[in-house]
Length: 108
Picture 1 (spheres, rainbow, N blue to C red):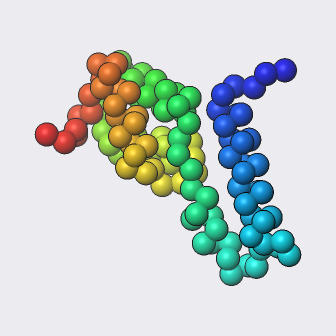
Picture 2: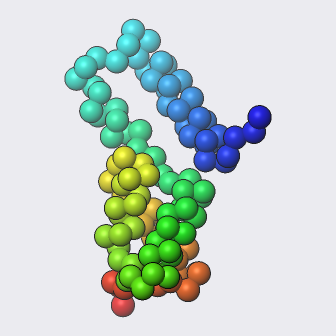
């Protein structure tokens, strides 16, 4: 059974992260390092996630709603359970603009 690209990317990321943790903490991760490690393991959106978020936002535009940077950040946060990075916001924004859906609050 094949898996969607997003699942393969996520599995690969998790495998690399776990291997890295095991190498750096052969006796286990001390509690005081948990927060720092989670910050280091922040990830970027996969290309599949960028397309899905852009499609969801385009549907809002079709319904007559303006798309804003806040909308992008909200959907990225829901997809990653993390704060949206400027790079990911720019990738989603570029995909929307390429499809003819520029942001209502795009920088001039």
